[in-house]
Length: 204
Image (cartoon, rainbow, N blue to C red; front, side, top):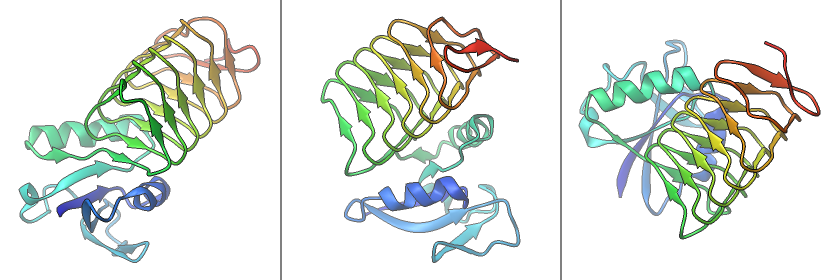
């Protein structure tokens, strides 16, 4: 069995740990920067940084942190050390055989990734999120619970979709942009902006 460590011992980790397939992974514990935290969900916090982890090359890693910028930081550290990333796919998720998923992704309960869609490295496709046919999700994206991107949508690096938001087909959401919970996106979203509402409008 492959030995697995989860980076981040907070709320996101609860979903990730639930989805770990025990037949494939030997889940060993967490790395978390909170030095007062020694256990989480009944598993040990093994170290408070990647640098402190003994024999770190022996493990695979998944980053269970919802904040995209923090998750990217840990991703860059892991890649810099030449360490291996694991993608965790919940057993209830539905993924087309014609879809592709990169390294270090978490695909949550009842999430759907349809035909010819691509999800790149270090993304979170959370509970009941839908990635429709031909959509392209760049690195470090977080699609929150029950969010939907329709056919041929492009999500650029680091963008965040709030719970129950919808991006209609053939649109794009720019780099590090934020789509508010429940928003309906009917126009392209610019880089580094926040949109919200029905229909979604720029608020920041």
